[in-house]
Image (tube, rainbow, N blue to C red; front, side, top):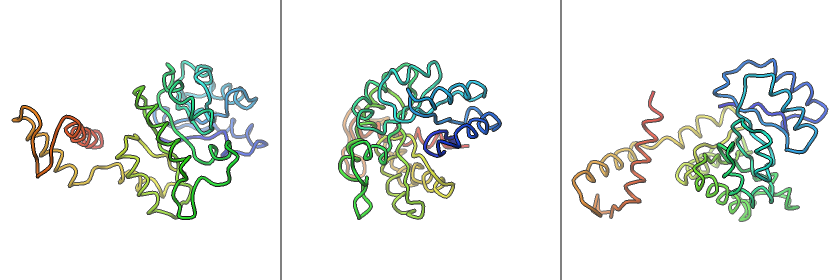
Length: 243
């Protein structure tokens, strides 16, 4: 999907023009998300008024801090962006909202809301507080059966760093990783695509389970219900990605 941004991607003086551009942009509504400014701001009201003049319905709400913020957009499907300290702490309640379809988190605004200076260490890894927020948003989303979207990787030329984070996101339960540049798309898609080895293992486990009555051994590894679900999830992912 593509995100049309009316918030931080646009300088405040240019937002009226961005809203006009939104109304003039004809994309597939099923594959388009519109990111609006935080609830309670003047820009939010103007964004929603512009959105009503388009065929787009899925909204990403910047700096979501409560389920009431989400409800203000109902009945539109909302991707709640938990990117402040309050938003992360409220993520479980936000995920429970009737209009919430997904949660995403953001490291840079989060650290700014804490009064910090950088979300990453000199080695490029997330600081502990960012890692905590990432986990909390993932847990909140999946506990309420909402999709979870991992944060953007700002360093466009750091392809390896993006690959490592996207592979971890896929393995941990995120359904997607947000991109900020077209060059990142295939890296993320490849990271979320199960490898041939993973597919072979999952297929073998599933076939072996058909003749077992409980815990069993496969390739020297104990397989119980959680491991069987891992295998089924890999096969489910493959079936969804097949043309």
